[in-house]
Image 1 (cartoon, one colour):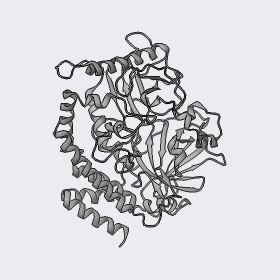
Image 2: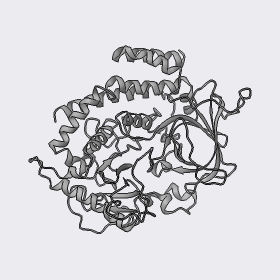
Image 3: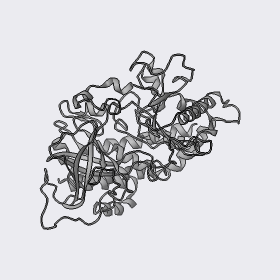
Length: 501
């Protein structure tokens, strides 16, 4: 049976079980791409370009990057040219800088991810619009983590980030805009990637006020800030190292300094920390610490007064969260945070079972005169039904109950808030609303099916796994069915847990 016929019968069976009313929408979708058409091509329609693989009539954008003999580095970005085709017609050509991205993923995955900047002819930053995204200069080509020797990988559906980011946007919050593409670099086919926006302060991304180093007066210093709980970046710490260095620079993941970060005054259990911050990577008590990295203003730009302000704000919030008496009606911790954003962040991390959630790749931001907000969601590679550490039938926020002394444990915030009737009531109401809308079973299955159908019918799945071999017996369709089953089971488990709050 052909791929198209097999996919059709799978869709028909799935949607008769959930909602046959969606079938006309699926038919419309299969005639169009996942995102809006980027527009007419500028290439010669009579001369097809020569790609590293034959793509036939695929509607998936095909990205060709040429570095002209220069090897790609971890840092800095090297000069390249990027050309984007759709149905073999050129739709965009632009100079870029490209580098590898990721720390752990760079070391363990055969399929690498890349950071790119769009440049002008002189090498200066230049804002460009892709796939209907707002104009900007910083983007990411994200590939799934995969090992072709031992035939294992995370996210073999190819859509973990794509799906999670779309769901979070459907919930009403900003998440990186995404587009499936196929990638070729220097004449070598790289497979299916997700072209996405890099998270940064921007009016169309993390929309907080600009904050210059000189803006330290009371009316200005309250924002905007973007913080991140994450590993430190080896590429930012040891820029001049050769590429081989980054294949084994594990210590740089935990090399926190006063220049780039600050530490919570409380440990992961809510107790005051007595030992000094910024110890050697992986010291014996590191598991107790939570560090906040300066994302915006960047560490090289943030003033000392601004550091003092945001550190005190976080400390005051944490102190209030620990001090509030949840048996009374009075709350002070909610003076510091946007509770609704914390609820939504909890929901998306738990629904996607983001094993790294809350403790890594965790963004938060504070605009001028506003409260602290959580998000956007980021980096769901080890989520859903992939990854272990946490049982399928428990909250991700209980990570510390299952993992002993990981270098990155969960901060106390989330288990403490789950003790609060006010937080639980807000969670219960929000989950109930979402389950009859964008997070209903029907909608969850629809999101998976439309992405899988798009990739498979256009032949991208087969082309990807011809390069990234997963061994005899690998079945992409089985991965999709497992994802759908997971989402139904997880959401129904959450139904029961949240309704009992």
